[in-house]
Length: 448
Image (cartoon, rainbow, N blue to C red; front, top):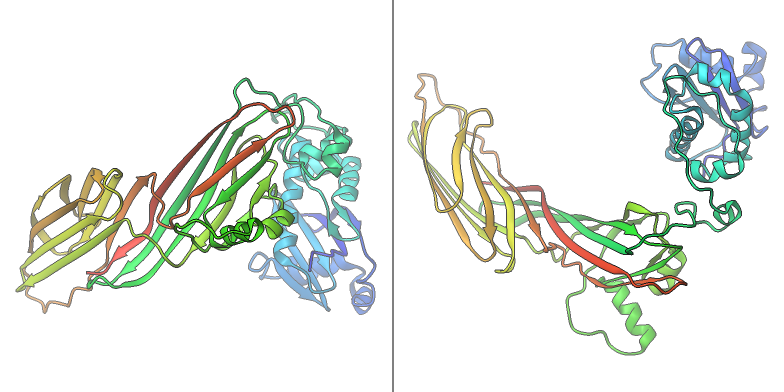
């Protein structure tokens, strides 16, 4: 359920009301007994929350059947009062977006003085951004098209930049508030990056204990007019829907199942549900189109085979073999392998077949760095570790996992690929599309 706020209050640190707006009258019965004792909801908030030691420990409190969601911004408390079960995350999201909106009108400042200097403007904005307790449009770009009154700015705030004014009616009713009209570029280009992070926990014997990929699609658009983009991926659902529409089987190739997909607000969800293609009118510049997660069929970029032998109480032998599994024409950049050693390490002798390695005393590990790691190759680290001999009984060494850091361009651990990226605009101009893939190490650990 959305917020359904009954009222919103702006209080100073003493609990005095600076400004308030009542949206619903459903808190009267719940607060009838409280009214008799304290007068109103503000007194309830001041007495039961502000004047207690629990202030700041939890931003959600219940008093006499009503919920108070409050947040402190500078020297102002913003309090939302709700009488029914409501979405708390949505309420705080509303507060954050509302504060950003006020700052855009007040020149970047939001405090008690800014509120006192802009009573009329704040009341007008509160009527627009919430209707009967339900959040509405909070985009500064759109609201400034028809609420043109300027706020009283702080002398230290930056001056607003002059921007061309687009068609307000189209922006408000056409649901494309993230893009203004009249954009024009000499060269129309689209940059698309698929960035993935691989998370792995592998046993010392090579069996995978936990593995998943978190990815995001980043875009940078420099397109004229109001273009419509259509993105096709090799996800299983999308390919099955395409074959169903075209009444023919899909071409052979790897398909993947995307989990936990979230989209930017520009994506047409109705068309995605029906056609399983990502259609959208992009914002101008850089933005995050979507995020996803993969839990099955992950292509691990590296295999690590560690062997650590403890020879008595003062010596250790360490052998680590790292093999790149991705294509021979690819390479990893900035590969770092951290091999743990005991805290009482006194001296190390390290040999590697590629890159450089040395003992890092502050991190208790052998730091092995390979600037460029080609695909389908193998590198080995061999080390002799001398430990400090102690009289006290030696405790067993709890071996931390080996950690990897890397970045592999033009490789995706999930196997996700862009099948097509189409740009349509009524003027029919030509566009240049750039697609790039990057896989990075998230929590990439191998037990030893």
